[in-house]
Image (cartoon, rainbow, N blue to C red; front, side):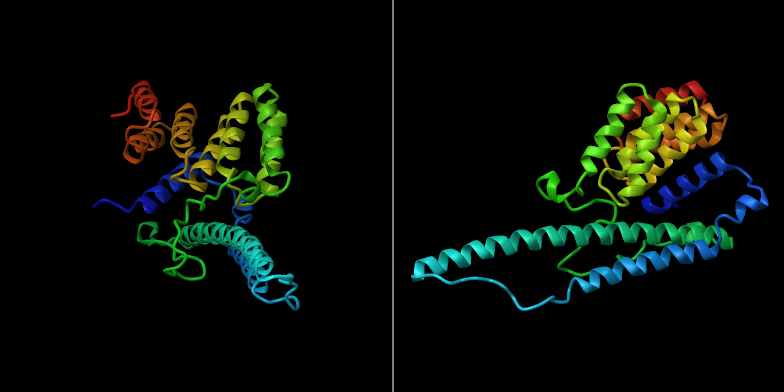
Length: 281
């Protein structure tokens, strides 16, 4: 039976996590508890409450539509309408982005809860959209809604911080780059650049010779946006890293998914070559 794409991605992530982390001692297992997951759900609830407060007015409207003639007033109305339309589009994008990020996080929490409780991961269905599905705002949970211009997509300083980390990577300052990319994702959760930041952090860890941490970063990049532009490369690098770690079976499974999920992508040939090197059947 062919599993849904989301469940296949979850199984890949679960297998990769098991291969990367292996059996954990009791002290390490205690670090991920149901209480930790409950705390993350509380944080999501607070973010939803903040969105709810944005629906409340803060005072009387200050719109000025005065004019000495009918034409002046019509022009003032048109100007104000353009301003309000631009603000509405920016807020709509921001809310859609938060809903997408929240839905992805809840889906991840559901997956981890089932793992902790020893349930059947294959029985997981699609995570319902945060706030409920509506005809007016139907979005894919893994793909942010695009709007023109970086100014409306990125927070102040977000692009500059990313570029500074990327420059450190390009210059071969791998430790500095790894730290800056980790700090970037901590400072800008849910950023459109998060998958790229994780991927480049993996490259930095590879540069430092830390293959295990690199694999974890590639896994974070792929699971963070399994259909984005970085997904094929992240999936390939994850499989290759698992192979270097001696996890041949998991590496072969992961590399085979590159062609299954992204047929025709340039990364497919590299994945097939890596599978041949590993002797995958």
